[in-house]
Length: 224
Image: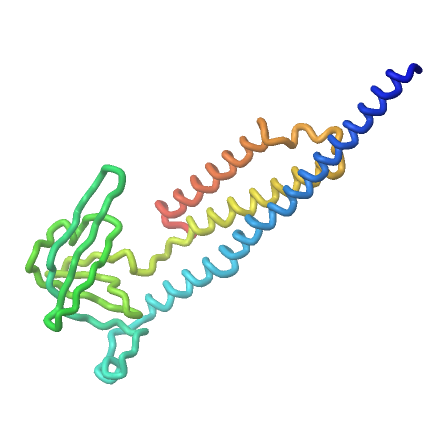
């Protein structure tokens, strides 16, 4: 072997080792990155979902406040107050929809409440109308007028399906990162097809689409 050929082969081996080192380093980084969505998934299933579910159950179990409870300013019961509508915002379409009502009372209190949609009450309200506000834990959760009620955005809802969908997406992304990273560590020379293009990107898109579809379907149908 000539000196030139020997140097060329040596450089090729060095470049190959550096390339394998970069692949293994990327594998380790992917495994480390998987801790972020894994922690997010843990937070969703261990904290966010139980907290929302407990809040909803507490709200469903709440009873109207008694006179002593109102005097003691207890917040776990349902209190009602007569308020006046100062103005409403009923904007649909465009970049963002907005459904709000500005309310006042006789003691100069003024506040805003938001809604998820215009009906059935917000769309019929106008300035000067009297409404009954139901308050729970210092939040206005329901407005009513002449028997027509509408929940505000602060009202607890039994709609944790989408929260679960987000947690599931995070778990699947974490699992994908771990698998892709482990393959790079174990088989740095042959880690196909565990790469971003095309399978990595496709898996993330499919996972997100399926989880959102199942979550939305569960919300619409009303199943757990």
